[in-house]
Amino acid sequence: MGTVLALASACCYGVVDFGGGLLARRAHFAAVALLGQVGGLLVAAAAATLALGGAPGLADLAWGALSGVGTGVGMVFLFRGLTHGAMAVVVPVSAVSGVALPVLVGVLLLGDRPAAPAWIGIALAVPALWLVARPTGAGGGAAGCAPATAVDALVAGVGVGVGVAVQYVALAQAGPDAGIWPVAAGRVTAVLTVLPLVLPDVSRLRMGARDALAAGALGMVAAAALVCYLLAAHQRLMVAVVLASFYPAIPVLLGVAVLRERVAPPQVAGLVGAAAAVGLLTAG
Figure 1 (cartoon, helix red, strand yellow):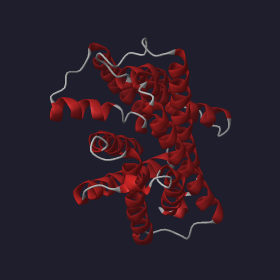
Figure 2 (cartoon, rainbow, N blue to C red; figure 1 turned 45 degrees about the vertical axis):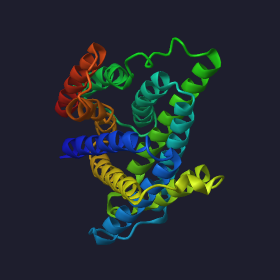
Figure 3 (cartoon, rainbow, N blue to C red; figure 1 turned 90 degrees about the horizontal axis):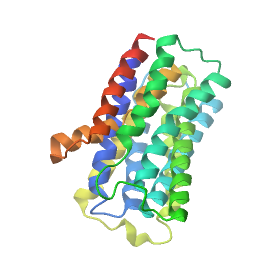
């Protein structure tokens, strides 16, 4: 069941990335981010209220709040990196560091000991994620980046990865009896972390009603992704982290199915590797 929930989390996050990318072409990215976090807060609070479970402790809420800071920090670094136009560095570095850091924390600090097939799956997942997440095409390469831009992109990619790692590891530390409240606490701190992106210029929030509703809906899907991840992480933390981190594959597949985009050979290899890693992680 944990495997299914982690993969569901990846699918939800992939849909959010795909939809958010399309929406950000028509509205300011900061507005999309903020309204998404607000939408996520609403659905997380509703789910926490309706879900069965005991009252969360202060530690559970603190871990949940820390996970939201990780979400906000990751988004800030992502937007900072993409503003410099170095997606070819930011996206794959963030994808790889986002899965590698939680695995290291799980082994070194939390005492996780995966079986041999799971280790092979983790080792296969890292290059697979790199290949899937790495943009292709004329503007996809990083070779033409100026050194300063390349360094900025590398810092941004690691920053996104650290934010994702904090989100995943912190959320998993909340006790299973806390229900969905840690996710709701995380959405509060995520809103507060993203808010400074908008405050310098409130006009960034101007967008059509349909776009605003779409941004809020994407945030709700993202909250569902976190709920699925939280439930999966209570069973097998490292496996949940790795499987949930396969979300970059979903925009690639949606791009083929919806936008009729072509998949480059490296991405095909990455998708095959990701599928093999899922099988190994499930078996392990």
